[in-house]
Image 1: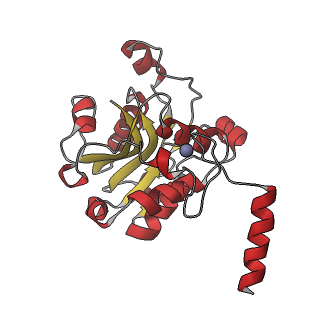
Image 2 (image 1 turned 90 degrees about the horizontal axis):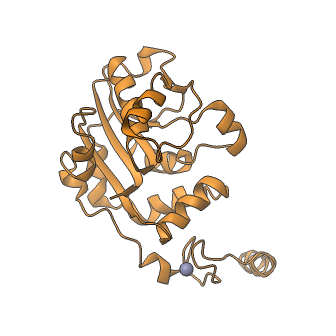
Image 3 (image 1 turned 45 degrees about the vertical axis):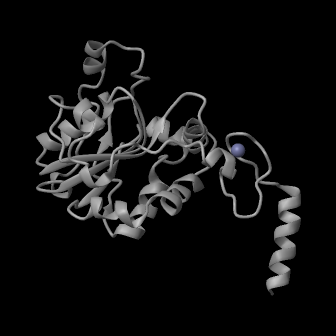
Length: 233
Ligand SMILES: [Zn+2]
């Protein structure tokens, strides 16, 4: 049986060789998603998940929304391997990247971060965008985290009711205006008095997270924490 599986793998791999999402070189044995050379270039978020109640993200969002704690897996830089990871996860349907991040980067040191949190909520996509993409880019990541940490993942607690375009080129005032009433809470029961962890792919301006976090707090959430795959610093 084992040999047949191996033979199948060999044929399948021969027909559809897997390549590194960043440099496009053929992946060798043991390599997944990225070749080891590209994986070594990844910059981890330079703050400990253990002192997650005060770091770059909490400071960035200070005065905009009260945060219990925040962490990120990586630092986002243009043309980096992390940018390729996010691009493939978001636009090329490569959802395995979410599982890969959990397998490689959610080690024991990071797991206490989740202990006093009740529920994970993704930044929801507008139904129009969800239809285009077919999935939320953090779904597989969150389900993998839920498997490891036992924290609940709730995809229906919040709805995105307003379609928005990219926030990065807008002024702070334009961003605040466009992010008004973007999110709605169908039933307060699922969030009331809960310590909520919002999960997003990349933190850039923070406008989306600010809007979602404040909507949750206004509707009775006990606290907001943030976890991102990567942060632009
Ligand atoms: Zn590579």
